[in-house]
Image 1 (cartoon, each protein chain N blue to C red):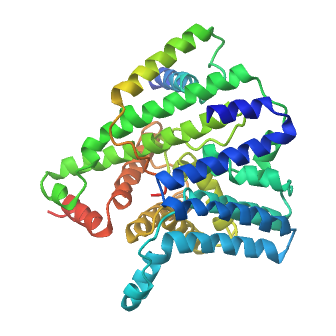
Image 2: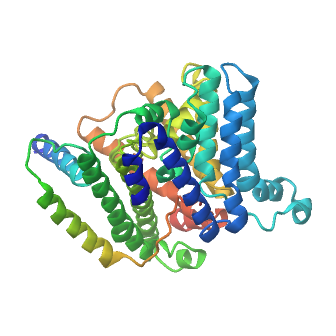
Length: 379
Length: 63
């Protein structure tokens, strides 16, 4: 990364996208071969090349934008959901349709969402086309390639074209951010694995229910420090290039309702879901039952995006139900029931508790998560 | 008590963001030169070194 960031600073501005593209391809191929997917995974770099060529056809209200969205969904479906869907809906044909060598191309969940964003914004005519190299550097920008934050082309392009920002300041902040991310990961998230590793059927049956709560709350902390640490590394790495990318977390566990939680947790995904699922469904400018439906569908998509499993669907519905519950509460109980600051504290405690309980669906498969709740709630 | 505590917590959060690289400028003008940053990076590197080598997979890297 460091040679790439230094080279990016040294070359003329019209050559910068090529530095990003070459380093992005090298990064993708190297990590695919050695970490994910092997040689077939490395060939998935062709997806980026195809997408960048196809994107040249995007115009306002063009059918190609719709086809672009469709093909991004197909990429995601084939690699991520094929075995899950065929196993779920065609159980009798499972063996014949099962893809034994299934693998996930590096960062597919994230880069396909950037493909969809670009196609949708081009269809609406709200984003500049950019050159082929600029678009390719947007989708191949390796600090965010693996796990976000999910960028917006309209934000990225001006930064790519802007004169280089002060090197010393960018590197001071970038290095600090990267080191902070690594501390969050190694010193906090990984340390919590000692507790969260026990969230198995055997572990759940062997301890009192108070310990179960402790374990699932520990998982809530672990996933926060793990993913916000990763985002820190990505944002800090981008800063070494002089490129500021969107923040992904901002004190999510201190928020006092679930809607605020989702505007402070995995922010780039939340806003993506708002713009490309919730609002196209009608958003909040419809009747209350329709809003509830929109929230449930949006969070169902969020759950499915997080993983191909019934537990992720349940996790999405858990959050959809919480968001819907908040809407109904705000509709039927418009005035606060409790005086401040007790009301705020109670709202925070309920949000924090329910979000953390919901992680049970995220970190365990469905039968184990149900066992967890039976053990926690039933005498 | 709460009225005094909340601004303190908020200011602490802003300092944490600054030392974590999430905020460009400190909450109020303060001198924290290259020597200070070098020292701070040293502390962070020691912590990383002490805890490295455990479970190192990131949860969100394609699941």
